[in-house]
Every structure is written in C-alpha cells, then in structure tokens.
Length: 337
Image 1: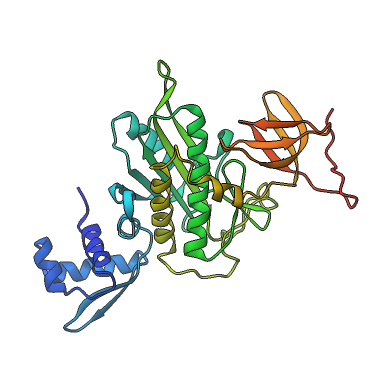
Image 2: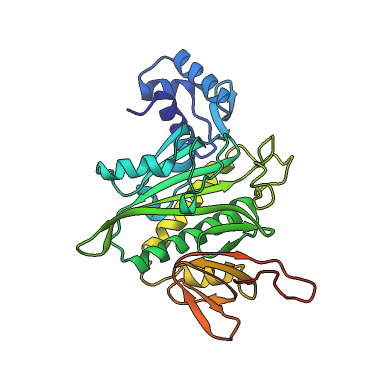
C-alpha cells in the first residue's frame, strides 16, 4: 500500500508548480488538515522544499529523491514504470532480480539512496554511499538474443550520458561498453543482468542497473578508487535537491525510447559519437588473453574494433579494456608477455 506521505507528495508533483490547498489534500485523502500539515513537515524533514502560504496552500519548489520525484517527470513509454524508493538497499539489481523471478512486470524500478553491496561489472563493488549518487535498477521483459542484449547495455549508456547532459549540463563520454566517463575518470556505469531461456537462446528478462556518482563523499572516495573515479559535480557544489529524481526520470524516458527501437539501433550514432576510446591505446582482457591494441571504432553491433600491433583489426564482443598511459614519444608503457 502506498504511504499517505507519498500520495501527498505525488499530488504536489502533479500540480506542476501550482499551489494545492491543505483542505483539498485533506478531502482527497480523507484525513484532517492537521494530518496534512504533519505530513508536510515530515516531507520537509526528508529534504523536500515545500512552500506554504495562507489561502493558497502548499507548493513543491524542489523535491528530494523519492518515487513521485522519479515518476512525475516520466514521458513516453516510460510512463508505464512503477517506481519504488528505499533509503537503503543491499543492491537494487539483486532485489529486482528476485522480484523478476516472482513475476514483477516490465517497468518495475528500484531506486535507493544508498546501497550496502552495490555491484559493478565482474562482481566488483560499486561504492554507493548515502545521498551522493543515483542508484537504480529497471526490469525489462524483452525477448533478446545475446547480441541484442549487448546493444541494450550500449543503449542504456547513451540514455545515461544524454540524461547527464540534459539535467546536469555536462558532457560525458562512454568507455566501451558500459562506463560513463568525465575528464578521463569513471563517473558511473551500467550493469545488465538477466535470465536466459536455454531452449530458445533468448532472454526471459533483463535487469538493468545504473549507478552515477553525483557528489564526492564527504570523506572522499576509498583509496583504491581515488585515482580512477570522479563525481559529476565538483567538491563543494550544491546541486538542486531534485536533481537525482530528474536525472532518473530523464534516463528512464530515454532508455524506453531506445528499447522500443532496439532493432533499428537508433542509439548507435550517439554511442559512436560519445565513445571516448577511438585512437587511444588499450590493454585488452578477455578469453584468457591479455594484449595491447589501438581502438578504431564501434561496429554496427556495438562491438569494439581494435587494431593490433601487426596492423590486423579485431572485433571485441566481450571482455574489458583499459586506457593505457602514453610515453612522451607516444609509445605505450604496456608490454605483453
């Protein structure tokens, strides 16, 4: 059952900046005006900026992260989403995978203020402290072959990068296949997990997670991450309180738009344009191999094309790459045994 506070917050979001009288809210939800007033106080304590004026009522100026803050700005196919917000979760992907196995519908979204066991690619931890990042997962019930599943991750990376540009006015890049980069450091990433129907070779569902570092933690990033990660906003910046909700809504709106045209690969031109690897020398890991190569570009299946030291080109379908530092003469310090 939806909490009364969420219903009041939803009504304030729906008013789109107009005032709603306490009497109207009390009548709509069958409570007293005093109960509404107490709910407004509680919402303010949670970080929502709500203005009150005699004979006018309450007006939402800026909302903190919440389910209504994400759902209200959704547009297009993403309006089907049902968003659930929690202050702390073990992992939004983990919880949503459990719900997917129990039959949760497409468009179910889990959003958390913090994660205790946030996860990234290859089982790595995704540092998810409270109040500084956007951590969400969305359930997609699409029948996709493995190649299309890779395109889904790439499309999600484009949706994330475009959402950051739209909401935060920042230009970020994409490091193949799923990382969001700002000024040469990782600011976030996509984690796609799911269930495969072995008889058909197609996915039964996919759970797609997004993690973005908006602010640097007060105590800084852990030592093992401090040289490789960054936040979208510089230390000391104070973004608007509703930025995480707007960012989540923009991401979901763009993601569902791209998902509905995944076969046409409408995301691909943007994915190529946003790629920050072409021309860079890489260390490539995958299939039991470790080798160096130069990134050439992205092919029509969202795979990475690289050029080996002997001039041959190779297409990477999976694995991991990292950008190598260059010496003053432009030669890589990386050596292959």
